[in-house]
Length: 203
Image (cartoon, rainbow, N blue to C red; front, top):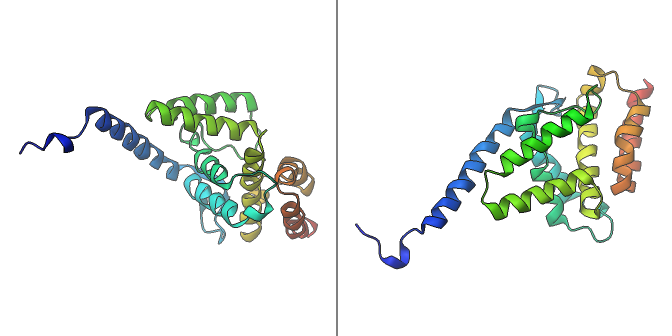
């Protein structure tokens, strides 16, 4: 039956929906990307989709740790988007030995491909958020980075060491590779979390 003209699907709207659904189906693959850190009970590795959800919750709960001018809505958007590139580029543990330039090139190419599945306006907006997070220069991005770094610490602590044991991590490495970024965006949070983490390394 022919639909009334007022309710017929518009070709442009249908094309837009097709692109949005293609993107949503593609990012399902993030559930297959395993991270170095385990889930809290140490029963299996965390996947990147779980990590993205968990750090979004961290930001929502710990919003009172954010500095002045931070917009939590933008922080949440960055955290939900930032690891999507791992579908193509994989997860690179912060304590692993790797070529940062090579990894960055892989992630840039992944961002171009995956965000490019979206309608043009959303592709531009999402890519801009991803780029902002990576640059870590705005208050929103600095806080988002701090939250992204603090969650794996508590996952490893809860699981009895997790990837710290796999990579023979020291407290000095935690301070330099993780602490500096957390402290920059959430100094009081870093003071608290470091006090929780430090005893593990004095055993």
